Image (cartoon, rainbow, N blue to C red):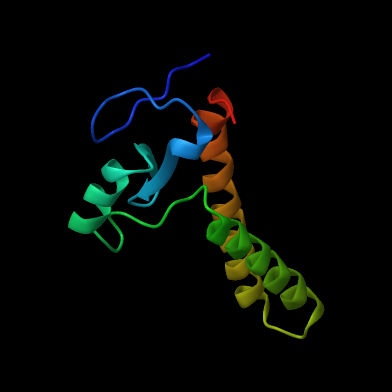
Length: 110
């Protein structure tokens, strides 16, 4: 299995409970320790540079909410451009989450 190292302290992350995956920029994702490393990074940067944790319960709820909005948009009489924007946003959010799991989470024990 691949070892996952924290971007802040460069130490090995042992399990998923100690992992926080953060989106940096549009496509970049980076792993951090759940404790002081993520806190240190989150205090210094905000907005587009560092987002909230990708592997959190709040993010999962956001994906579910976005999926519901996408489904509703396709059944209502909404212009096609709006439907495409909502669909592309859903695909973007799901792809970032899948990338996080594929690169980091699947390599760690629960």
